[in-house]
Length: 223
Ligand code: AMP
Image (tube, rainbow, N blue to C red; front, side):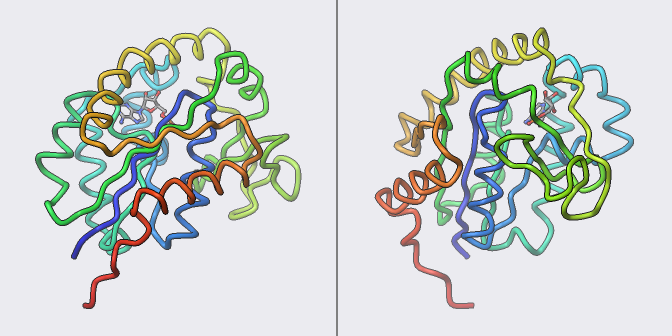
């Protein structure tokens, strides 16, 4: 079966997670965030706590194994949306050598946001430690302040959302994603979307770009 595979990436607080989830609902595909997979795995979250809190990358093999395990679940059969993966050339090569099949249709979407806007956005970001749902005090508030809409758990602020750590994460993002963006561009699989608009407008822009690219017209398989 030809799968629809979307890579979502962008600097911290670009809104890529929100957009990935929105698109996942619209396309009926799971949105898979490797950051969430790590945060929700108690053993790994403990083991790699300092790397994650300091904005450093976790070892490629750990991430690749987590991803393989997640992709083996039935909901990923028809395709999936990846948020925050691949983040290194090793992960990129692993994915294209071991996971993508020739019949799959893949597309990479970068949500671009300026540096000052990134800092502005970070202060309001919250997440649910139980189910991983993401919120923002201004842009995506929960119905009850401080409480997850999905599982009623108290929301938390990520420890890596401080200014120093964000600076580190931004630098790392530019160093690591730059070469991958060039690869996707060469392969003709790159779409860049401006992320400094209303959430629904960014979503419309993504849908329009995917439509233009032919990604959404991929014929459904007859099982
Ligand atoms: P995120 O929620 O995507 O910002 O990820 C949070 C943290 O998890 C990152 O700062 C890394 O420490 C780790 N992480 C998530 N995805 C990856 C990945 N693909 N490769 C390496 N580390 C990752």
